[in-house]
Image (cartoon, rainbow, N blue to C red):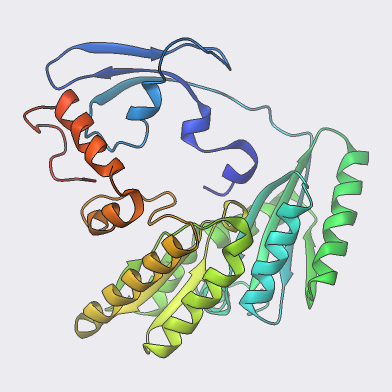
Length: 305
C-alpha cells in the first residue's frame, strides 16, 4: 500500500503466525520479537503464499506509533518520466518519505471528474512525510522541495490541514474507480511489475511507449517509492488479446531490468506463465515445497506454480 515505503509491507510487519496445514496439523511460526536467529524462517514461506501451503488462522503484527507531525505534498511535472526521475531522486537522498505515489495525466483527469476536484491534470507525485519533531519535518520538507524543483516540477502544493490531506489520499485511493467511471462498459487489465529503483524511470517510459504503440488506453500510477507501479488498461472485448500482449511485454521488460512480474498483487492464475522466466530452477523447488506441505493439492489448487 501507500505507506509500505516507510513502514514495510505485511511480510516486514508480521512477527508470528499460526497456520493450519492440509493434514490438520497446527504450527506456530515466529515469536513476538523484532529479531531472532533461531532456526529456519518458515514463517516467511506462508506469507504471500496465497493459501497454497496452509491456512493462516492467527497473526501477531508489529504496530507503529502515530506520527506527531505530518506534511503532505502534491507535485506536478511536464512528463511522467520526469516524475519518475524525481521519485528516484527522493529515494536516493535517503529522506524518510512515508508515502511516494505516482499519478499520470489520465488518472488526475479521471479523479477530478469522479470526485469533483480541481487538481492539476498532469503527471505528478503525491508525497507524505512523518516526523516526531517540527524541526526535523521542516528540514525534510525543505530538502524535498529543492529536489522537486531541480527535477523540473511545474507546481508544488502542500496540503495544509488534516481535511486536505485526507482529500488528497482519497483521490489516490479512488483512482481505479475514477478510471472505471470514465470508461463505462470496459474491462480493466492491471499490471503490477516492480523493478530496481534506478531502473524505474526506464520501465515507466517503456510502459508509456508500448501503450501508445499498441493503441491502448491506459493509466500509469503506483507505489514508486519501492519501485512498484501499475498500468490500468481499459479494453473492450476485442482488445483483450492486445492488452494481454502488452502485459507480457511489460513483464519481460521488467525481468530484463532485474525486476519481478508482480510487486504486490500476486501470481494467481494469470502470471503463472512468467514464473519460470523469473525464477529458473528455483521454481522446481517451490513445487517440491508445495508437494511437501500439501501432497494432495487441496489448498488453493492451481495457483502460483
